[in-house]
Amino acid sequence: MQQVQVRAEPGSFRDRDSRVFVGPEGVFRALSPAGAADWEKLAGSALFRTGVAEGRLVGTEAVDVAPPPEILPEGAAVVLRHERIPFVSYPYEWTFGMLRDAAILHLDLIDGALGEGMTLKDASPYNVQWRGATPVFTDIGSFEVLRRDEPWVGYRQFCTLFLYPLMLQAFRGVPFQPWLRGSLEGITPAQMAGLLTGRDRFRRGVLTHVALHARLERKHASDSRREIRKDLRAAGFKPEIVRANVRRMRKLVERLRWTPGETAWTGYGADRGYADEDRAAKDRFVEEAASARRPRLAWDIGTNDGAFARLVAPHAECVVAMDFDQETVEHLYRALREEGDRTILPLVVDALDPSPARGWRGAERGTLGQRGTPDLTLALALVHHLSITGNVPLDDVVEWLAGLGGTLVVEFPTRDDPMVQRLLDAKEDGAHPDYDLERFERALGERLDVQRRLALPSGTRVLFEATAREA
Image (tube, rainbow, N blue to C red; front, side, top):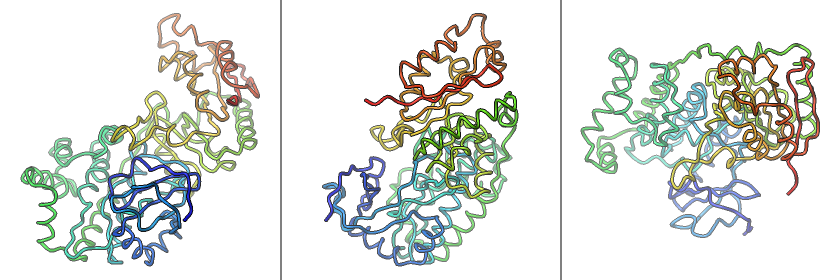
């Protein structure tokens, strides 16, 4: 049996029959004897073959690899190797359209599994990752053989982590990301009922999946989940009934809509305040850096409409395109989905308040840097927003960017730039005296090796390409 250097994935401990571990050779999954039996049935199914071929299921094979000792209570009966996803993201970083498409993928897989005499033991969006704008289900250990009279065991979790967040944004216009970031368990039925108005209660699905659900949970608050599940089994649930419920839920999710509004940033990509010569020079600068570095992972921080992420994409395995404005990112996601893009991953991320470490011991869900450090970072039209709008000292901005490692392409708009002047006009006279090109350039050179410098034709913006120094 092959010995490899591995570590257990801290976010996969909840399933006692399936545990993920990671090493230089790939991403692996240890299965208990019960989990191995479920895998054998799944691996022989048309659902698995078709799902992998279509990219809906992560590529998976059984391998002869030794897992970390005592990774499972009963020991590992089988070890699987998964296709590696370039960058892990979380539901509180997705747009409405991404969460909705992930929900539909999950429901389609349950439907298909029921047709094979199987089901999914849970309903977590954390089981879905992305190849660009294409969702892929990664938790192969979630599939299990369907037991007689088994209800839809993941129903409540689907409601709290998929349905309610989508309803909240579709019905109330309230972004769901802060709610999912605030609790890994999602929005409870009681919380969702309290968030809806009287008018909302007449909307499709609310009475059954919110009001009635909340009422039943209050009624059975003292009962354990095991007792509730036992009662549900006793009621008798034929696979046809469960399948019909899943299909009704799919129709409900499909009907949920959210139209992104106009913000100060949704039209920013079409009018960046650059002259045509500036834009052409900037495009060349970025593409030259990307083609020379050919990064495995690139970050575009403050991506807006994703124009520069698109320039990098032909030269990279994965480009994470981040922006704090969810409306702008939703527009980008819809465009990438329409194109069938599998390289650019759009995420709702605020550089001033990025996703923290979450969950048990702060290890279940990692920070951006813990999930993968970029080989190339684009920080275009960003520094002035962090320093002036966000009040971050300029030296701190440079230190943060330098700490990302790899190659940095960064833009510095001078104090004469129209956008910078607009930001400074909103501040007191004399604000941000540290915001200065000479100071920025000196701080950059102290921390990184500056490879190129280009003043754009307008004379108010300067581009730099810099690389991390070898330790």
